[in-house]
Amino acid sequence: MKSVRITRQPIDPARVLALVGDEEAGGAVLFVGTIRRRSGGKTVEGLTYEVYREMAERRMREIEVRVRKKWPVVRVAMVHRYGPLKVGDVSVAVAVSCEHRAEAFEACRYAIDTIKGTLPMWKKERFRGGAQAWVKGTPIEG
Image (tube, rainbow, N blue to C red; front, top):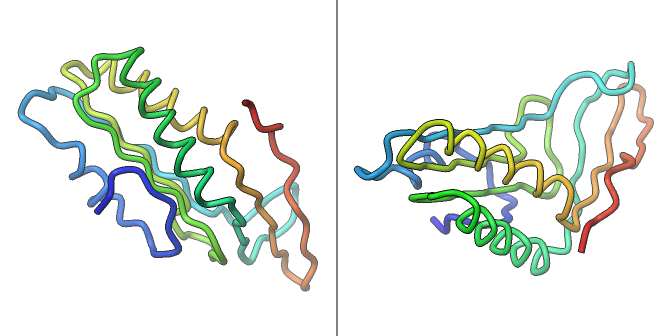
């Protein structure tokens, strides 16, 4: 499995975490984002992510480079889904390993926050009763 990718396939957090395992790393941090039941006071039945896949994967590789420049990272893995998802599905998983836990936490948080702010990805929520709405996101950074 590629350690940085956009996929339609379900994400297995254990597999993402395994990608960053290394005897040189004393700490590994895994962030898992899932589709939640409620949004803006409404009941969500699911959502669809649309993505400019080639650009999104390029941005994720750029994020990996930035993470490696800022922290002494041993390994990084980032996987984001696109297409239709249902409540409870894993939409994104980010794992980072470093020699020390504090650095792993900081690097992982930076990676997920940067993914959320820079990927060319759009989310449309489907609500109980059939209503749908695009989620207003963060403007994409350059």
